[in-house]
Length: 271
Image (cartoon, rainbow, N blue to C red; front, side, top):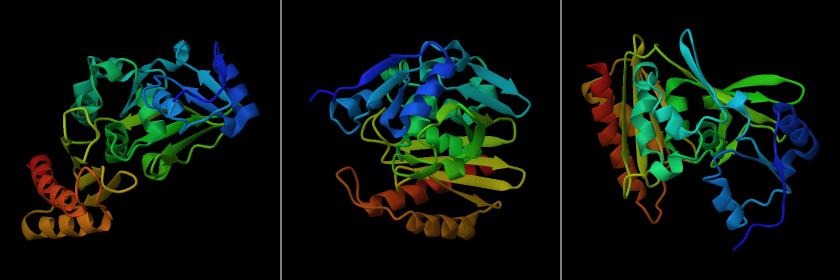
């Protein structure tokens, strides 16, 4: 199939992007890397009237570090963040998860914020943002707002972004976690995750997050658990995720993976 007809706007300024979004609303779509969007256009799962290309806006192609956080602009490609010299030091969990995001070819074009906007429940970047307690920076022609990752992802490929809002950046907390761990099970490396898990420990306990099972990534905060207490918490969490059978795996297999991987990751970060 071929895309339905649409107008193409090669944005030269951020103000131009926001003006088109204000005018067209839900009939407009932002294109950054286009690794997910172009496929949806070709199959007509997405049929925008206007496509706004933002990849020539230098002000969106930035990685900024501040006390306790790293802000990644909407124009930053996944490959650029992966090769950022401070990634392992500042965002260890992202450094662990990002190599599992697609393949070299898709990472060279795809963007971090594009993955967040797409909100695939099996994607690694939404899982990492949720596990770290990050936030999404949204902007319209009139105002800005910040939305916590726990509130931003509202369902399968569904978010709290309004039709006239641009995801200007995402912000990952850094330095507050003592240890991080990530593990994913997929048919092949780079495929969509059957189950992906992340654990982040700090002085208060551990946050355990799971992707690929429910309609969104889901996280739980626990105190320092071990032994039967950890097994009970993981078992209850696995059943709360409402796993379903599909062509890739059964619900039972996914629940088993959550329990097995979760036990290893939580113990690893709490050592």
